[in-house]
Image 1 (tube, rainbow, N blue to C red):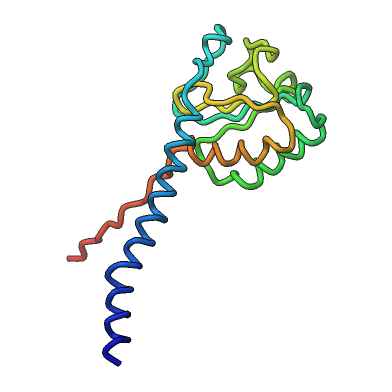
Image 2 (tube, rainbow, N blue to C red; image 1 turned 120 degrees about the horizontal axis):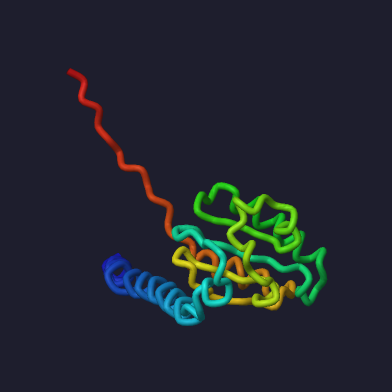
Length: 165
């Protein structure tokens, strides 16, 4: 019984903290590598001089005509993004197919030549292009991983105490 207690104490004081440290360290390394990969390439206004890109919104710009796997795959990916990220308030998902039909007051890319961008372009809240993708089905997972890094955290509501007098 004494040996069991010693092993249990050693496990709780040494192995569990080491496991936790390794787990947290691997998550931190993943985030650092993703941020390194997602360095700002250029500002949207460098390629779209006439556009009025609003700060504070993360944007995914899709151009189905440039997708390696075809228009339908990118359109389905757009539907998945809209369904899965519908509750994210500061996210815009634009498709160049729909830009010609949309109201020019709502569309911030009206003055842009869509040939300047790749099939999928990820733009952060300050208007910096973080990554461009070829539009293949293999790149769809990478887009979602990168969106998790680029999207700002949603503000948590503070708990307020009501004063009943």
